[in-house]
Length: 451
Image 1 (cartoon, rainbow, N blue to C red):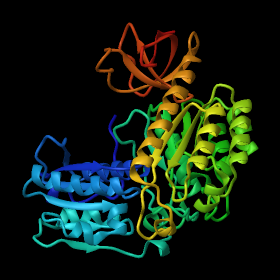
Image 2: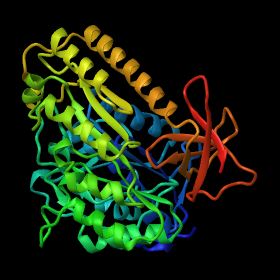
Image 3: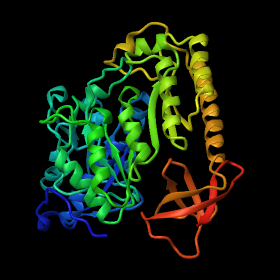
Image 4: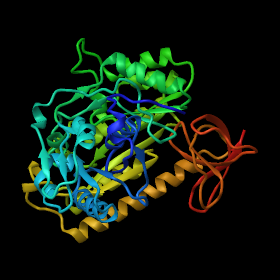
């Protein structure tokens, strides 16, 4: 497929350059890197892998945890060493929260935060490597603009991401994101509809809607709207393809959303829900707006409305003040819930957040043990969910590469189960095919063949 991109540059000035983008962190970061890549390729630059020499290197950083910040610094140093003499730019959330930390890395030419990232193409066009880094920064909490590409950005994935919302107004006490992403803001309604329908019409079997606080979509638009209304409109307009939600807050899973997902052929029966803790007292200290009982009732409501849905859960382990008893409450709750998989994160102190100053920080060895216990539980939940697909025929979106170990084709089912399958002919990348599930591998991987 041949795609063009918004914000064209003067091709004659930079067409000989090569570039490499290293993206850390969330789906929103990945979407933004895809957008930048599309702009640069449209201007005549050639994208290269990390194993090839690049004239320009962009590291799109993450700072959601201490580990993510460390990895971002490491990625910059590795890029500087591997691409000696390159113009090196650091952007993303770490560039927003601690630009001076990145500016101090020898070999970085520009640190560009989330308010100024739209300037990166022009910097690449006009600037050369510098001995002393320059920072381009702004005040993110007053930033109100949603920068919308004129045409869709497919990226390199078989299931492209589309960022329709950015920013967060929630201010959970452990989370740095509102300070690095700014207030909630939404892609205009017409643009969101147009981008999804265009991607589907170009042959993508699935589009993943993503955002920082996705369920808050449309609250800042004029006239005000909401995510369910957008999904209902897409459900009406699309006659092929499917839509997946990346993650949604528990309080934003309404009965209207469940009813729409239950009757729709376009919306994937898959919800990824941030629980964070199964103890109501800890949830209150986190500034999460629900109780453990509410979350439990919600998961059962989802399972009743969507019996075969994939239900993923985020869990934050070791929040300050988490005791053996409150951790057991989390463990017991998840054991009893019909969820499909877990994403388990150890708590990380982030300077500037209220929880960083809370007493009773959990010891690192205790944090590691609890994280291990929950990840093992998540593995059991995933195995049980995958086993429930035996003998069924699933609609699968085909990925581009075969599985290296088995040589089978790869894809993702509507309920987010990864599927390996054999086929008498190479299936078209990004197409939707039907696969009959035949067995599980010893490690619980779902395998089958074209139906």
